[in-house]
Image (cartoon, rainbow, N blue to C red; front, side, top):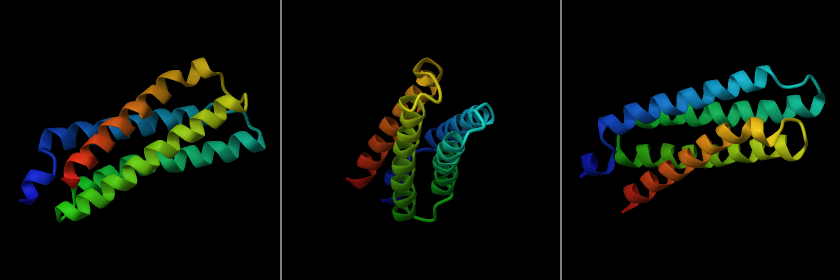
Length: 124
């Protein structure tokens, strides 16, 4: 049954809001990056992946079938993990301090975990 696979409305509403807020945090971080070439390149990649998580989760919530919901959720997991990668690079390259990025990294670790679990459950 498709309604068994697509998460309930409260999950969708909560994670639509959560992924959007996480993307907004990244946008504010990007606005504060140093104006160097490498910071700009990494920052734009970070912007793309974080906003993709939010946009694709929103699209998943509007999915016409469980297969469509699952496909969009797979993209969300990949993009959330990619967001973590760009955050790590900003830290490892010394562009931003690990302390400054910790909270945002933790948010994306949790998003990857929750979304990957939802994806796994939907596949059964």
